[in-house]
Amino acid sequence: MRISSFNINKFCGAYGSSLEPVYYNPRNVDFKSKIKEIVDSLLVETDDIVFLQEFIDNQYISVHRVFGKSKYNIFSNVDYKKWKSNVVAITLKNSRWKKSDLTFETEFPNKFTKMEHHDKNLCVLGVHNTDEIIRKQINECFKTKEADIILGDFNDQDYLSELSNYDKYRGLMSDELITYKPVQSAIDQIFVSNTIESTRIAFEEVIETFASDHNVLSFELDPRARTKKYVRDQIDNIGLSLHDSRVKKIEVNDDTLILTVDGICQYQDEEETTSSGVVEFTKVDLEYFEIMVFDYPFGYDDNGSFTGRCYSLDEFYENYPNAEFNINIECYTGYDTIYQGMIWDDEMHSLFTTMHIWNYGDIIYRIK
Image (cartoon, helix red, strand yellow):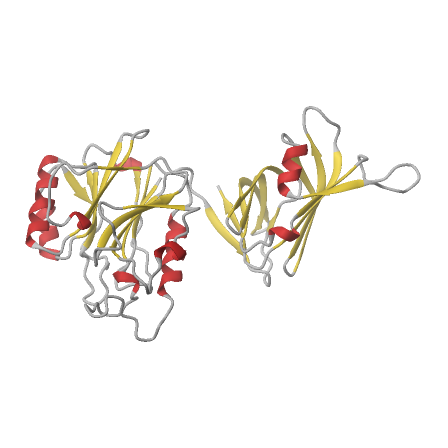
């Protein structure tokens, strides 16, 4: 589970905030798409969650176009279209996070968002301190232990030092790290309850970004096995192979095709190692994705002819719901990838198969 916090500066990039108009972007740079890409990179697993501060929506932003309703849930205490600055939480559509009501009343409900994950018995409070009343309310949250994790933009380095004196929480950020770039300070923080053991937390550093005047804070709670990332960028080859690997599952996430495999061979320093992992084809064109299954074990009969059928991904799983694909031959040419091999399941003989993938982006190997 990845939990992240990011002040997006009202989609204005690194430009200073302005009251009139609310959306201030003199060069008209597309920071909205950049921020969406950052959110996409942080929301990978079902239970990942991102808290955004200074979130707004107006005629210049059109949030419903940036964050499509089919993929995301956006949680807020208020109607963020009517407030000039909000704290919101964003999750994937199938996430098990739910918004929770605050246990206190405040004049600034737009500056707090509280989320609960009942399966994991976890509560996270996102905040943005911009007023003395908000600061007093945050102090009360620390005293009463309003949430297991309290994170956000606290807007004052001295105030963070004051909050660090509460013995029920510990901060993940050190003073040396930079979260607010204009003055090179760390005014954003993640406070974690002392009841959560440090061994459950994987926090490395802030994530540098030029899409806002703040950087991203992010950590993993109960991280899975660590992975290494390798990219095949359509030009350079890398010492990785899927030969003899078995494709256990094929998934599609927006325009990314994901193959879960049991063996990625890596050649490095004259040594060969094999590890499980996933292979992601970004910017894939699903109209050209196809799986050809031949009617004979090796694609031909005694007369040298062959028959078979070409399937889309949905059609393939409809006809072969339990099949696994063993890769014997792999070919990468430009934007075209072809895998050849055999499929089989418990109820059929092995059949010769080819998989054809067309993608314009990178091929990313995530090796456990």
